[in-house]
Image 1 (cartoon, rainbow, N blue to C red):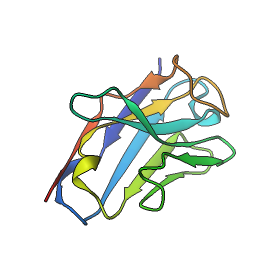
Image 2 (image 1 turned 90 degrees about the vertical axis):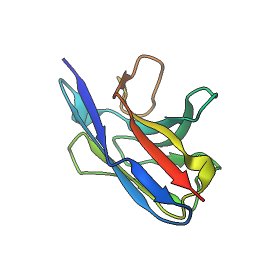
Image 3 (image 1 turned 180 degrees about the vertical axis):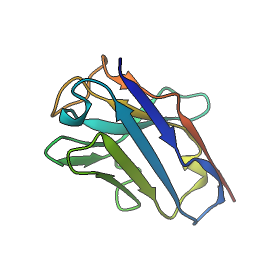
Image 4 (image 1 turned 45 degrees about the horizontal axis):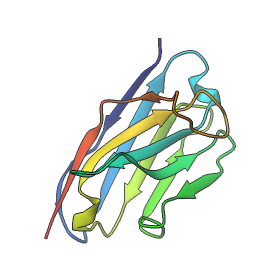
Length: 120
């Protein structure tokens, strides 16, 4: 059984930083892509950043240059360093563990989410 657990959310002021962590466990979890998604109030869940098993990285345009995703070598553990946070970054952040090494699809396993609140 796969488990995905996020941590690190909190309340910060605009311009400050936060670091999210995600730990996955289960068969094959260290061999698959992982990523971060978020859901802002009144919107659908959206892509933030992904990292493949080969450490290929993609970012949403809205976070490019401010957020950094990283992954521990050979472990299903990822981080999201979020710098220069903006009010519009407020939302619930979810970690996804893919069933595949190089992409995340709808059948990914998801964590319960961690809330990030950015105030002005």
